[in-house]
View 1: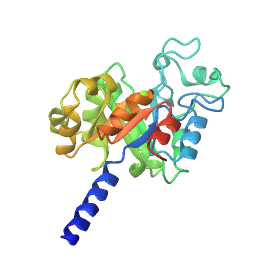
View 2 (view 1 turned 60 degrees about the vertical axis):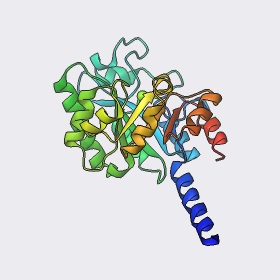
View 3 (view 1 turned 90 degrees about the horizontal axis):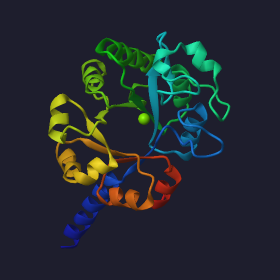
Length: 253
Ligand code: MG
């Protein structure tokens, strides 16, 4: 009986460890020290916190440069995808930092042994462009030998499908758009869902369905303490937040 109880306790603690929700800093940890989202400093701050992941948005400029910026608007530019890199680079962000390139971002990401880079590939107007963006991002990640430290997310189903086709086996690919069930995502070869908090509150059953299918659940963008606690209690794998300090506190980190 004693052995049975010990075994049960071991199993419980193994499950509890496995189920611990992980923190992803939305656009890096930018809400600190005069930082700004998607900058090198926001990535550094996320790395200093030692969170599981630091998310970044990647767009392609008119002249084919991959840059870390949310877009579409940047300062006086209505859409960064329709502007040349040099012009975007000339206009610093409001905290004084320049808009980083994907290469510069990967260079910094490589410095952490802990924090993964969660690359959100933004939607682009044509399938040809999205294919090119996916292939160029995969090539850059390969060049920096970061394949095991990068995960991908996208709203565009086409982008996710291209990732399934061209990314190395075992690459983490999560769909953002919220309009597919876990079974449909599994069918497409995605490894997880990364849905808006309201979508997952409407479909809390999708969390268990994902886990039963061997998929991960990420939720964005959770900044309210009560919401954070609710999703921790639901056992989601990742919470994406602008406030990683508060989430760390709730998780006892
Ligand atoms: Mg994003």
